[in-house]
Image 1 (spheres, rainbow, N blue to C red):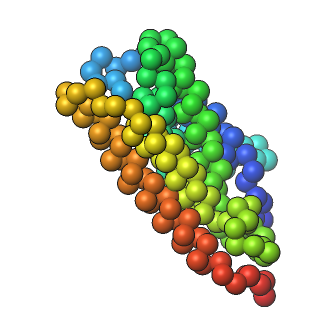
Image 2 (cartoon, rainbow, N blue to C red):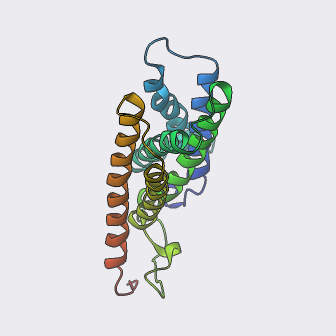
Length: 209
């Protein structure tokens, strides 16, 4: 119904995180024999996309639309990237079942958080006008601001931890750490760019018509 599309979708972040968590939980029971780590995003999306974007309303299936699907995919993707980065940086000493539990739990939590940030873009046109008293108030930022700040904080934490940690050698482990530092640096720049775009675009309050 046309009127349903105007209802704010508040369950999207939680259900996206739960869906990603459930999807990655399948790894505890099934692991593809070849290159199984490459299938982790697929497992997360298999759980996150349906649970995050499909609803049952008035006894009928309802899809939240393309914007929510894109926001869900982006949230799960970012969650997976930072999931691996945080796991290899701060929890590298955990192997086997312990490492898998941390991977699944952290991936679900990060996917849910990024879904919360991206929902401000997916929900565009259905939220009330933002009239902040300060451009530094994150509660009134759009998706660029909250996503940029979140990405910048996480990337800075991973980058700082890797910089203070000595690179053991130029072998696979050392190259992996170097690549992680470079990727964290790029994500830090992108996050700061999103935050700057949000702040610069809110120099004057936005008044509703």
